[in-house]
Image: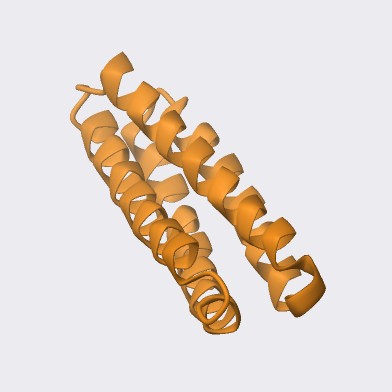
Length: 119
């Protein structure tokens, strides 16, 4: 159940970020920023719970995923701030995409590594 909430929150966040960063209006961008923060909240809560289950068996990968996840959230916030200032650069978008991809890879790695133990 918690894993489903975590995955659903990632999907929600991805949709809100893509929608928010592609808007032309600052007002519309702000709406998606607020909606994306709901995703952060659910991700952080479910991620902390899931990390308590994986930490004993794969502490290094769990810590890496946590750091990448927090970093990705930070990059999303920076991207929204730059979008509001009309200074969103392609380099920042590429860094954000890389952060998301690495975080997802670590998450799936944890799942498959611990599939017999956790799920």
